[in-house]
Image (cartoon, rainbow, N blue to C red; front, side):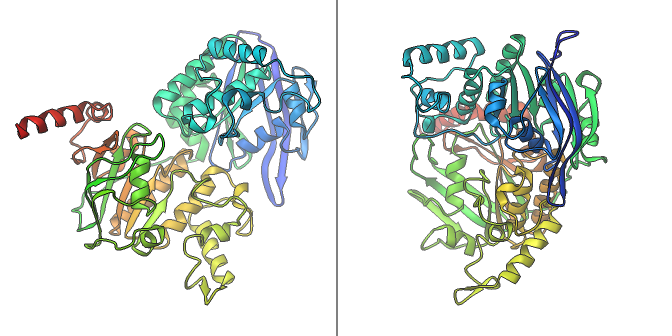
Length: 519
């Protein structure tokens, strides 16, 4: 998506440097952006992309360098000045109040406390006009807490447009979106860019970068190491620029599975709010086998993960763990039974933001040896464990005493992965394990899951990325409206075939055949 020839420069970052103690997050980075242009900022987790954008938006102050917006210097460290200059930012993790409506969230912070009374009718009309013009369909009176992830992102973009943003920063905008929601987002961006909006698009998904941008800037270890026109590159070259080396795809060797560590037979679970429960689910997780679960988001994946993780119990049917029915199913029972959890949301359920890396590393095991005894914590053992994870899993951070909220999403994910795998689990619940990770980190995580499978663990891989499911799974199930498909052995189904099941077509045939058999 290239700008017009000779389009004006709307943003100029010159020699931006930022240090956090001994860590150089940005090292003399210079970037320009033109009117009506989409540039992609690419790099590994912790490469400095988000830090650079936080300097532009005023959340951080650079140690050196300058920022100009529309030819005017931008005062450092003042988000309100960035907003006034026409810079808007949609963060990877949304900053919305769930208890307020869409309209209230959009208007929040747009007026001084002692300003005259708001003309609500005019504000509503303006939001409706922006929604229509940019294809951002969302009801202004809907509670944000009841919206889907895709709808919440539309609200974030509307917030920026309502504030007259002419430069929009999108930080990992598709990390939690379904393919359909991603397509809708890109259509919105095309409309906005056609009207003169300029966009900085931060992503790890190389196909999306190529689809939406006109130029790609690559950061590595805080430095700008490459810039290329999108039309002149491909995924393979971009991946090499990101990591500085060839990336080999994970390989899955053939092996016979072992006994079932966990079995579900005809399990139902209750519906929770808008999330469907399970309906007659039968599943076996076997030693030395990766079981992939494919499906469009919101079709019961959360219910299955909650059940296996100990947060839900069967309302109907039976569950057996290592050949016996659990007497009292809970998260503690799941951990005691050798189930390791890599949760879908690393921020809300995978970590505690203001805890250190050490505290988060032992979050699920602090209540017993070697990390505590008779109520007293052994912090030396906990620190040693955190350091081992940091080294083994390449967690880029200031050290184990740092707050985990200071880490990039990918490095946070690697700490959670290490916490789960270093415990030597027999069952691994991997729920969206590579969401929001760069290609190097994706390959690392996938290889770790394969190694755990080869060591005899049973792995349940829940992913909305069909390519990932097909590449890593020994057997694949599809989940649709809480129902589970038969198991498809590796190599027996095409993407189109699985896509049909994901759309519900296979379940319709199963239902018809079941009715005929019953007759």
